Each structure stands twice: as structure tokens, then as C-alpha cells.
Length: 134
Image (tube, rainbow, N blue to C red):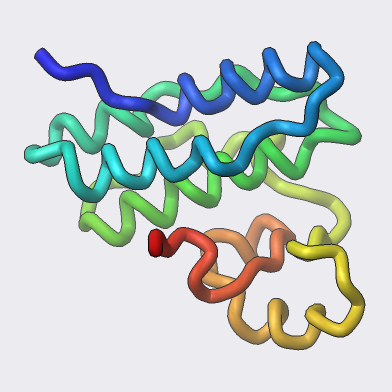
């Protein structure tokens, strides 16, 4: 049986990196996206990648990562026509203040307009192609 990279795996890696004082590596998100979209052949395999809640990152300064993981899981499930896991509605998955990708003031208007619903409802503002792979 093939092993795939899950939301829980990604959160575990990000927790380890934060504990080492390193900013979490977003490029590993690509492993999850590729496994979900390309390598998993069945709905059951796809569901298994997002079913279990992530290892929550320390709330406060890193709450944006919790919200991001939930938005990714919700987006992938909606894209594949699968039920969205209940854990994505946990209060830890929502930000109290807006977070904008890139951190540039000049991008805010574009990100407000483009951000997919699963991100926007969590107060995360990203580009329309945030989960696209080149």
C-alpha cells in the first residue's frame, strides 16, 4: 500500500520546523496537493489525507497556519466533491484578524477580490491560484 502525505503529516512537519526556530516550509504543501489530486486513485484515499485533524500549531502567532490547513482541506474536498471534515470548523481554524499573503499593501485589493471562499471565510486572503501547481 502506498503512503501519501496528509494534512496531519504537513502539520507535524510545520510543528517541528517552528520548534527549531525555522519558518514552516510551504513548498511541502505541494506534496499534499500532488498526492490528493494526482496519486490518490479513490475517494477513500483522498478522504484519508484530510480526515484527521492536524497537530494544532501554537495559537496566537501561528494561528494563520491552522486556518491555512483548514482552508486547504476544505478547498480540496469541495474540488473533489467530498464531504468537508468536521475539524475544519474548529475555532482554531479561524483568524480574528485578516491575514494577507505576501504582506504587501499593494496586493490587498487583489487578494480581497480573488481569495477563494474557503480561505476568505477564515480571514485569509490569498491569490485565486494559491493551490495551483505549476
